[in-house]
Image 1 (tube, chains in turn yellow, orange):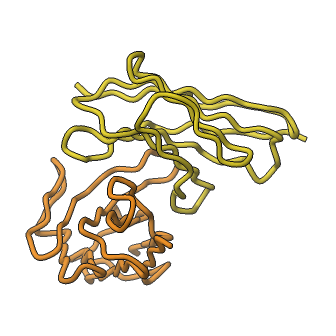
Image 2 (cartoon, helix red, strand yellow):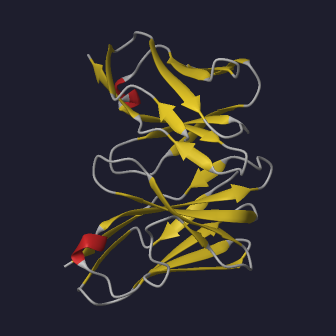
Image 3 (cartoon, helix red, strand yellow):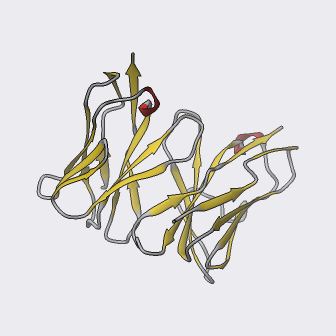
Length: 109
Length: 116
């Protein structure tokens, strides 16, 4: 079966760094996505990785290791507005997105 | 780029009525559009996938006669919840794929449906 695992909840301090991990087992792989979803709102696109390595985009970076079925989202210089759920999703061989349950990130002052 | 709009953003209706939700890709042509449902504090649930000009593919457990999907053009898809009941109250979100980033799904802002 297809499976995406990510922690349910994480807590971090304003100004700090947090890493949200995602492991996956899917039928085929056409890239991994990270989305941010604030409470009561729709998801917004953060990043897309299809090759191994680190992609940096401002305060957010995303890493992929296809051989390990592993990705992480790294958030630096955390701000209160970063409190949200972070969704990991893998595009499978049929170009369908398989979604993780999301990681709720709580930022404390 | 890659902006998706959804209308209405919020709707309250009586049980038994039908509700139509529109999803539009504003600055790109969406070869595929997706409809999701999300209950409070739960994950996104894919309801159906639609390609322009063809019938939608529904996920297991989703009644196609109750959730009618029309993808008439490369920029518009509609979801009609027929004979809505209180248990259909949920957050309905569409996404669209196409344009430069062929794999990326861009989400509309969502429609909050409350059936009384």
